[in-house]
Image 1 (cartoon, helix red, strand yellow):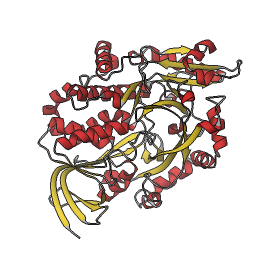
Image 2: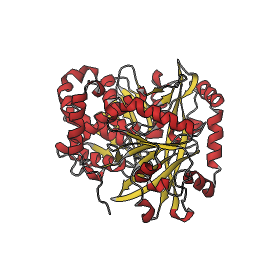
Image 3: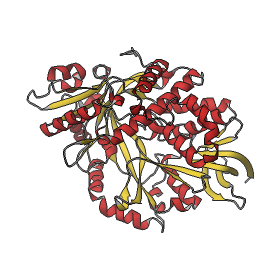
Image 4: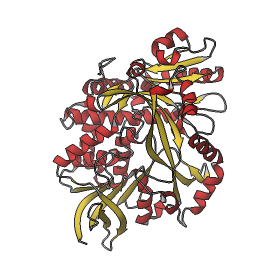
Length: 500
């Protein structure tokens, strides 16, 4: 067993979209820094970032109803939708910069224009959707959104959903044409392909077993070669843990106080995929519905047109599932081994609080394919069993922590970054909107971890992200300019792209 030691400036754990984004930004800002990437699987983007494991929506809060909550007084709170949309605009600008700099050749390989829609049934929900539309359409970020409860108009927008639907049913939808479908697996591959040309050392089939602080303040990462079993040690001044569901265990091993009192709860997803090209051809949008009572926000039902491997696909779901694994390729002991003396009370409190979620997950796991078809028929009344197959999506580990508002053991439904006080290590936890807001999230990591460099980096960051430090909703002219230029650069102009 060899025990070699390698020194580097930055270690990125996990070869997903987050590490790819952080590595790419750092290489643009400080090309001389040495970066090592450690990934236990054989390729980049094979876990949470993989196109079949990821919902693939450019999460811009255009259609996701769980980002706009109805308040007790009946008004609709759109603050979260605004925040997520602003963050997605940052991603779009950075991707445009990569295309303009010839770091990405063909944007159509990872991003496509696609209308985003919300659809609801029942009088009460129709009233809510109308109020949501009124609140959003007054905001420049959501310019161009349309609302309709007219069955003739809806037939034009979503023929597959409207066919054979009872004529007396209350149904409404909103539609915005500036939505996108993003293949984060393809984007991750492109970014790592570029990083390889910039002398980034990418080690696949290298599993991180341990992480600890050395006496001189560096981080030492113990890495096992999956094939040979040999052990290497890598040291760096800065470590980013971007290993999806695997991040929690590594954060705990680092021993930083900020990682205590944090737990994780795994939720898996199952999608139904349409295998009939005639059915696929009848739908061209991402259509999000409303989550069932007790369901976690990541289980909002949606019928999505997707572009995967240069082919148009149709996915419906996700149905929630449960396995104690934190990664699709993880261990059944992941959940149990994540419970430590420092987070056991947090985990127990969450268990007591989240009985409805537990009950929901058990019900979901027990569903037969026919029962899943019944849920699909709420979207497509004439859906046929033989046209649809089941696909198991990726694992998401929802963060559990103690918060001032929710008290002990509160389940979090967003993306969380945990950083050491001295900024020498950061870990990314949580789920949606994740990948869509990767650029914003990584800039936040850099602010916390490299505050001493931010001033000198700012001009280059502004070149990559023209709106950096500015709220677009308060600058409609800049927003319009950025919308136009990103749409142009990323090839999102045509209403309908012909795809075989």
